Length: 152
Image (cartoon, rainbow, N blue to C red; front, side):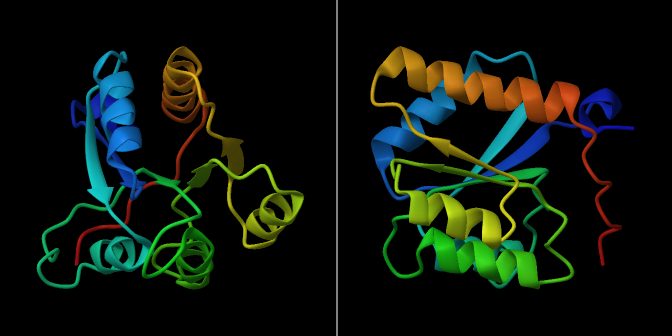
């Protein structure tokens, strides 16, 4: 049974260093159909600490899905994606690359690192809102997500 059907909010980890894109994503999800808890990591290093529940994130719930930007400080999204997909405890979490890059090399590398899909962020507000709502509809209404492991 999905988290939404159990009455628990769905959990999205947004890995994004641009505060404006974080705000737009929050707004789009707020207007969505489902109860969603949006957790935000400002770079790949913080995302990995959150996913691995390193202090101060030891109580962080496991996300149902990760929205990952590629170009960030400290640890970029490519390295974070590689680490997520190499980690047996994390690799089943779907990762949606959501980035401004249209470069074929970024697209190919992301899929080679086993991202679940690659979406180029639109520049226009309405299109961005549509994309985020489409992600919500697809991943939480159509796709059957893997069960979360029991907490340790």
